[in-house]
Length: 304
Image (cartoon, rainbow, N blue to C red; front, side, top):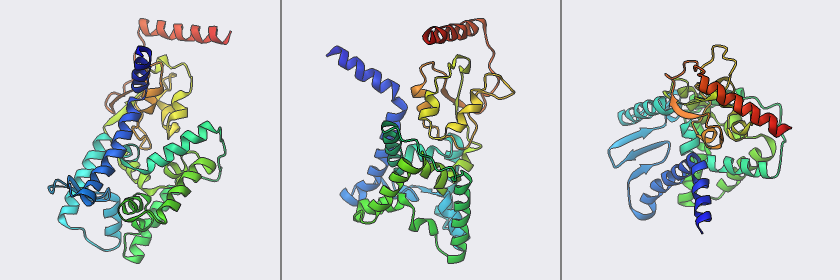
């Protein structure tokens, strides 16, 4: 019994950031649904536009951008909500929205889990990350042409919210399509190559303060676990540059979602939550140098 308790404790500790994200991704939609379902109005609206306790407005900047393009000037409350949201994401990282709030992340994570279990490696090489920028521009242009907020007609997050309230209907088809796209066509394909919301928040995240930092990158033994689990693995490479070509240990890319999975899976405790201001090149002490030597010695013994 004690061993089982210890095993559960260790499992929770090694997945603490994942568990926190799951709690956030489930709790937030539930808070939105408590009002329509049970009349408990902690928050009204949805992730696009909401009001907390009838006092604090929150508005998706991407929605307001489309509204402006369509020729509609948002109300003062909406503009206040935009300012609050922008300040929040500039602090914690724009794509925190993707990993901590977006319910579609549950779908794409499930596809990624099954992809690894089934050892599916198919990747369509014509997909480029620039596609999502083109989709974003297209959405803005179409909003200007049609005079409507175009993305909300096909936004899977909005459709999922409506589906939970009024019946899923065709929403199931869209959710299934995203799942199958990520499973068989492109790893993290929806979030990494198509979703304009993610790339918009990634733009905000370029200047965000809270960052993941490879504080002990000298201890990295190149196991690759962080690259396997990271939804945007290309953001990790510069932070792990132990050759120290003038590159600090902080992950500065706007694509980073601050999901914390690299922190969870790293057995060498390389990563930690930090800020963009702690990006000085690390000084290797004698003790650190000995730790590095021990790691490499252990790796060589394992290979032998």
